[in-house]
Image (cartoon, rainbow, N blue to C red):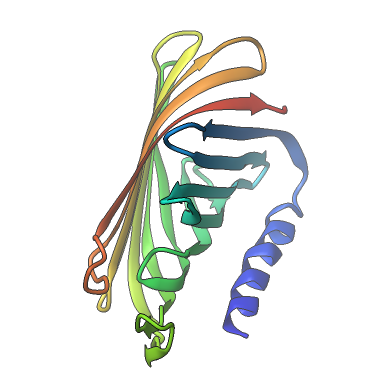
Length: 251
């Protein structure tokens, strides 16, 4: 029930933010695939769809991304990574369009983390500090509420030893977005967010460099780091993901 409410809040924000007069919309699709055979058999897939929309009074960003990996270990095929993340943020422009009020929603599901799911609703202040021909820098900060459920603890036979508990609570969310146009065909981006709460502090960093191959196609090298301060015993706090992907700009 709680999952349904969170997804509804996220999808409803799309229609609310898009109610203004529409100006050009940009959308990128990102794809990466690796398959190996022989002594090591591995299949991995990474995909992402990101959209940015500039309206007269709104600036909106939406993102959906997923990762899947399967390895064959001792002749047995096992899924070793399975996660997806969806987010949406609407920024309402004040009299000074560089000063904005934002609303943010996200939902994350990582099969191999300590959590069954993690979700966030937040609102607050956003400011674009600068935006020139070569770079731009934006930050946002505000209060919110996190929704999370711990995974069940099971024994070797698959029996539930401890039922996973809900960990909901008030948070403070902060984020920065820095972009630097290295040349006419290459761009550096640094995205960083942190959600500080009494139960857990969740942080995410994405550092990337992309090089344009032609008008619509680019090659992207990225490093993504996901960190949770409170995890189950035997689970690492930090997950890292390094990827080389192809990015297609639809419009």
